[in-house]
Length: 272
Image (tube, rainbow, N blue to C red; front, side, top):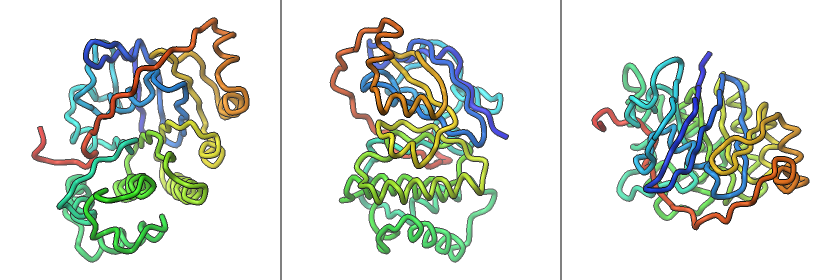
């Protein structure tokens, strides 16, 4: 049983304070929908948990199974069982998917996987996600469509089997059929493990297929409303106007979002 605790988390990027006291707890087997208007801190939350260098933690704690996450490097967080499926996956020309994934798996394993066993696992998941058969031999995300990049993030997650997976708009860029394929794969993984998911999405269809156990609305860097799947349905049908009125909030005029790349959540023993 794993437990991720975010306690009074304050985060800034440059001179701008983005998160202003986030409190959230995620346990094994749970699905948390992270919602809210654009520019209010959803992606910042996930990337801060994973250790993105563009974000500075100014106050608060992040604990994973009681251990101080903020004291860990990015690769240590990955080896501990945290994973981030990125909104803007990085392209890595010259590195094939198979080499990249095998290195990531070996970094987390007590002993390296045999080439045969790794190839079996990779082929199985590529077929499961209905990806092109040459995916293993293509350079990581190089020349990929938006949908291929997102499925490639899920492929990494399926192989790495993290304890807690954070998915940042993993469904954007996917057509209806691809969303169902990804959701089915995630549901199957949940059925066979105690993985917990934190999902940022603006599409109720994705949440309809995933059925979150918890829902959180982030506004101006704070969690202003929490609930279960009923909250997801209410936001889908009514938007956020009801929440603005109920809590006497003024919609923010969001700045143009900054696009950063974390590189990879794959563990790298040499990265410090």
